[in-house]
Image 1 (cartoon, helix red, strand yellow):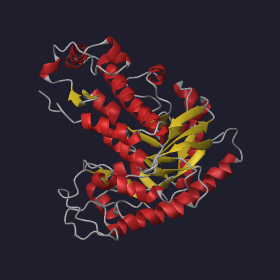
Image 2 (cartoon, rainbow, N blue to C red; image 1 turned 90 degrees about the horizontal axis):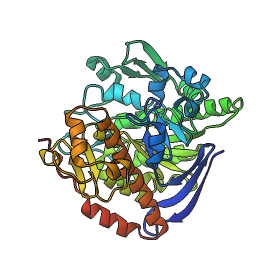
Image 3 (tube, one colour; image 1 turned 90 degrees about the vertical axis):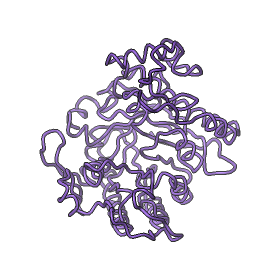
Length: 424
């Protein structure tokens, strides 16, 4: 059971509010997808995740394949029963690990480039081509992987990788990724793709995009084959790639959008400052009647940009990862709870927040937990950050339904500034 309906659209923009129906319940879109990499949201129980307002979780195919094994998840009754989550669930394809264990391995780079000038990326002309030859360019080429001792190697057939746990060798093909995801049994799954570095050359971005298209065809064929024998069907999302290049992104959107997918994912590998333009290129072409998921995005300002340019779902580890390191969202920006000023601050983390942490505890208490290295610190901080982001997207949805999106965006972003980040 899978369907998507649009209830309201932005008058000036591609954004929309809708409802995505799955066999485990409905998702009111736009919505933030809480990441539970290994079938658990770190530091939180499924009940706490549900109570803070999350509607959907995403687990990681690569990690569940390695531990405990996708067949164990299958034999336990699928992801929902295995982790005791009764709402909608998603799994990624494992394709991101081709990037994180390949081009990004040991490089401290992400799918999104924050500063194209300082990283030597150069400028992009109107045709989407780089006008600067990059001396420090980081690519996905196999020879570079071998030089750097990376854990993943990409071939036409799939990705060979070594386990980060024990060094054992494994091979993911599009067909194998779909088989694993069917075993895990989430409501929504993704086609196998190659996520590239934002620093990769135009030539390699094109090569990887075309390979992603071929893998999409193979993923879709395997999914349909397995669906014939499945008691419950998962919705399959195809992924658009193409980096930060307009011609590649539009080509990928046309090709992937023309395939018989239930929804679409938009892969990373672009400059942060150009992300909204890139997303708009894609969503102006993808079928309007199907849902779109922007992968790996979780900063407040980026969520507004993603929604405004036509995305319905977002996932990111940032809210919980930041929380475990003591960085907390507030309506006035981020704070670092380790700062000395919070040791005796008896106010809530955010006076306007209604999460469990803010209703029951003070900044001073949370600061004490972190300084004392108590595990409860991560729980309270994660509850707060997830509540903040989940409800921000819910409020964005309400603003679309009420015709107040532009006003809500302006009011929120005028207050939200990245303050007090330095650790004292």
